[in-house]
Amino acid sequence: MMVRRIGILEFNEPTTAENRKILHVDMDAFYASIEQRDNPKLRGKPVIIARHPRENSGRGVVSTASYEARKFGVHSAMSAEEAYRLCPQGVFVHGRHDYYRQVSEQVREIFRRFTDKIEPLSIDEAFLDVTENKYGLRSALEVARRIQAMIAVELHLTCSIGVSYNKFIAKLASDHHKPHGITVVTPEHAVQFIDQLPVEDIYGIGKRSSERLAQDGITTGKDLRSLTQEDCLRYFGKGGLAIYERVRGVDNRPVKIGRKRQSIGNETTLYPYLYSEDDVSETLRRLSRSVADHVAQKKVFGEVLILKYRYVDFTTATRQVSLTAPISTYEDIYPEAQSLWDNYGDVTRGIRLLGVTLGRLNQSEYENIKLPIERYHQNKNAQTE
Ligand code: TTP
Ligand code: MG
Image (cartoon, rainbow, N blue to C red; front, side, top):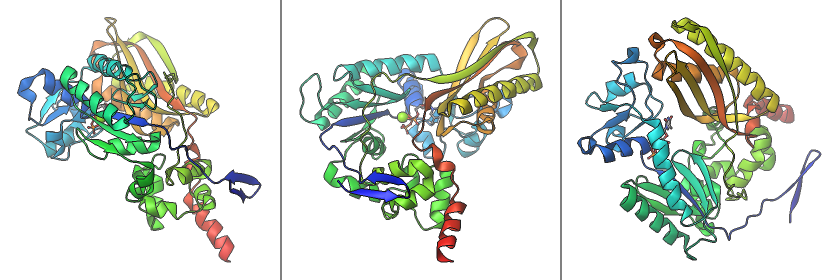
């Protein structure tokens, strides 16, 4: 095995185990497809899961949109207002999150017919290790076909599946032919597959990093592969080594069974009850600050932000948003909490409890992306001077 030295550190050149069979299953337009399934009038129509912009003073946010609506440019996390501008004929439907959770459990039950090695990533996606499976099938593609068929026939929903030898590539592959696609990427084709991807598709590379990379002419997986380990460390910090491996098709992370959904949160009961938006915002700021402090102590990042609220009449709700990049700071937590509130809360009913939780925590391998690229330029200059 080749060993490289960088400063005082030593690294092995990455090697990969290529004998695993990993699936990544992702449901197509999950919430919107469920609504279309249950209500035939919505089929073929541009369905937008959000409060109508005329409700709630137009502060709604789109959870997801049917593929018909996506043709107009409507997508997750966009304001309902903007979705309405792009697609005035869109049918706005309130989300039914508890129900979607039940459907998610039905999907998982189908997975369990094949394997217990299931790592759920979100309400609508999971990794499955089907190297050994309960049907004794040799072909992972065959497992994928059967899962897709069972979900279609039994649940009347479609999904897309990536089939590969590791999690990183399986996840990218599931996105490759959506909706209702199966994409197989074998070890021989992995590098070719990665080469054509835009850098922002590569896990752990956020929007800001990709903009900096673009300035240096690095826009594809192939460009990224031209970086040395040293370059990767300078660009991405410690997480750069994982990126160095990934672009070479190496990802030896196991499928983590029944991964614990760790979270850090804080909630507070309120008396007198809150009836003003200002008071709610102030409380959300306080809670967000305490969550951020706690998160900083633990040195973790979270990928889901959950807001909990209880009305005076004891009706309790939790609403959550999946974030496109892991967050940890007050500056990132508070706006998400506030926007969930704006989207779903109703202050006129009186609030007796508020809670803010950051979920799906990880000691992100990519957390050191903070290392600024300016530093890279400085280093470069220093070397050439
Ligand atoms: P996704 O898998 O990201 O989206 P999707 O299933 O709607 O569409 P695709 O076919 O592209 O996979 O998310 C799954 C569900 O999670 C989605 O149906 C709604 C919810 N969601 C939110 O509520 N807010 C968000 O910002 C995102 C991205 C998803
Ligand atoms: Mg999906």
